[in-house]
Length: 252
Picture 1 (cartoon, rainbow, N blue to C red):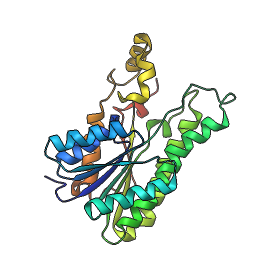
Picture 2: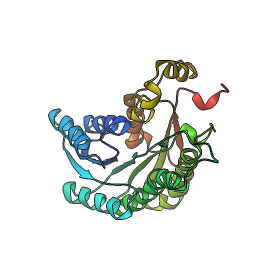
Picture 3: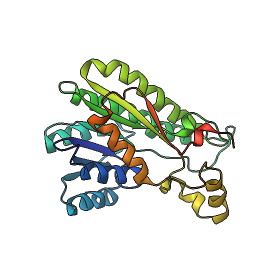
């Protein structure tokens, strides 16, 4: 198992990409701290890992709150002695498809607080815990950090920031043997796009706009996360890896 004896923390581990990544990292041998604001969902992920013979604990966290993120890292160290992998994955979309002129400040701040500030808190807290022995920090950016769409201003801003924070953090943390990378998922079948799936016509149109006419699965993203967390990716640093089936590469 390529992650045997490693300790991983996954935020947003109660569902979607986070749950799939937590399960995959555990399958590859890591002990996993499942962190989420949703206790029941996070505990379910932990139960699934334990049922498969893995080691896992749940930590409640609101990643928009700095003190909670630092407490999460402290609890992970208390549980397993150290942290080797931190997957800053927790994120949200906007509650409604606001135009730029309609976008309420509180909605903008909510999205930025979780998607951008939460990643900053995770990078800082994780790096402080890793600086004496090295490690890997993986952040969830998005195709929407690189290509623009209508009614997505706050989400675009937050995910573009994650991409640049990844590069800047990789440069500063290289001296501690800490790699920092990001993934940029495209259309992935998770709760964040559940609203589109409620209307079969909308979902069909969205899928048809993809290069191979389908959404990705959380497990397909988790496979990339597991690779980036492993020694097989030891020379991958400061990069944003697209997991989008080419969505950012062509004009629709």
